[in-house]
Image (cartoon, rainbow, N blue to C red; front, side, top):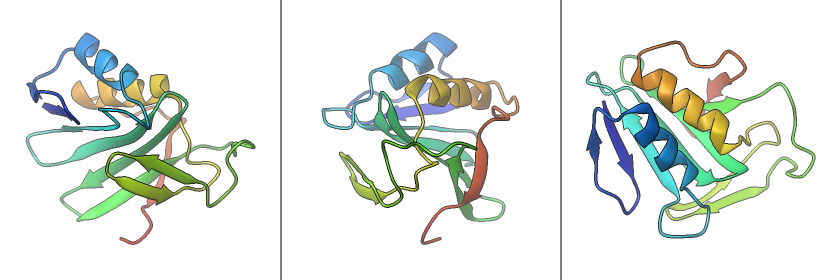
Amino acid sequence: MILEQEGKKTVDNPTVNQIKKAISSLRGHGPSSFASITNSGGKYLQVAGGGITCMLELYDPETKQRFRAFSDRKNPAFPDGTLLVFGAGKLAMQSDEWFFADKVAEAFCNFSKEEPLPIDIKWRLAPGF
């Protein structure tokens, strides 16, 4: 496993604590606003944003498809089309695609241990792919 974070050194085989620290330090505006964790087969999870405004995506190299995470609940504070602005650009989000950093950290930790991702995170094809 490789953990990469904007503005930080790459970490090989990160511990759960290293993953949680990396995700909790992300901010939409700041020196570190996105991260990814990649397995040896090239499958990865990536997050953009931070705190209460995180977007999560999963890439599967076998199918060459990227998926966007969503939940069963829409976020009334962020209507469909709200932009997530972070260091790599802007993304238009759906109201059900906003996650808290602790849920993203849980997904990253599960991924790092090759365990199933949290069942309350659903997946659909990422826009534009």
